[in-house]
Image 1: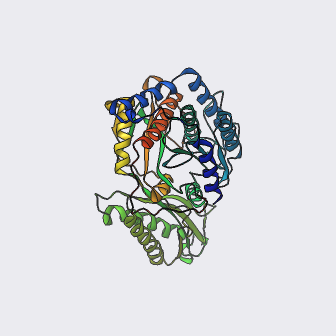
Image 2: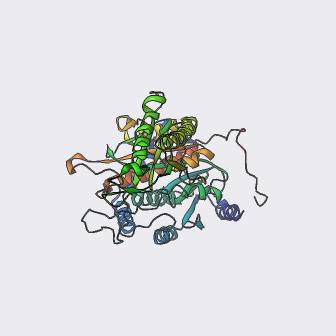
Image 3: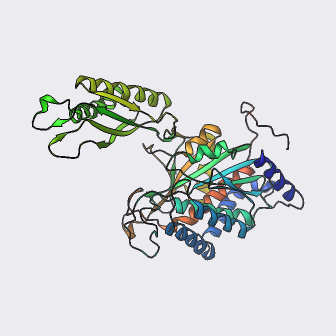
Length: 445
């Protein structure tokens, strides 16, 4: 309720005196294309590029894990204040929500994640992480800088916007709780659509890629404790070996995809954790294994979850062991598939082609990675795309979640311009929401 009162206040402040340069003539194909081109030219201006790079490097030097992004959040709030953009804080512990435009409908959201990873950076450079064991190894520092760059462009045209752009600076994407907590705090109330991006080391600079429908997989995690009877390795007949049982479990789990899944329905089951024993000559009492399962449909995820439990308990029993299997019952670590709205794909395609040219807009094959942006897409239409960073003349960039991951900062202006253009043109081309979608009513509005 407090969030909506804040929205209403901004609406009153912007209601009087606002004039709109983006007139009806802007709705022509030529007028819309000119908006995208003008935004890219602005994003590439030396002052804005230098500012975005500086912001990104400050964040990179001071990485913070999920729900600990206090300094990152403070930096964001300072920059929004300098731009004259009102915001709400705290949202979802450390999150920030900014507002640009009329303060009234329609509302369109842009999202950037803020959190780092618990990794030691191995790249030696002037702006290396100053926090031992923490690193921005997934590009979230660039995502924040890009959204702030888009905010600067949008704020320069705030009187021209035909609605309101909601800026979501989200905590804890890596932990999978940030998006859900922001939704619980009401950030999507009355928002009609949301856009997000991720930098990519495998797509050339100046190129973007995405697709309608599923683009990233849904994922869940499991952990199992397999218990037997420990003893001396020289007399295994007096033990019940949980390592042998766990080994059989791991092999059998691979059959869930190779022999039970439809080959045309992409799925993955991976055991990435195996803990058991601490000596060369002692069979332990128990072994702990854990891993991930991934698929593009909820039905496939449910089936995998069921079969993973059956296989682990069954194979353990064959080896005279007991097994307990956990799937994080509170669903904190379960992501739905990232599914792009088809109407928003058409909108993205038109904006990107106008800005970058058709040859620089690629179709992206789905991948088995996961994104908690998917939680937003379960509530409202959403679109997620990938922003190219690759420049082969500078060598191959390492992939995300590598201690050698780096950002090609030349990508920042493309991301900022795309964000700003996607939001601005969405508001100009807005169509009334479907009557099938439930409208949240707030008495104070």
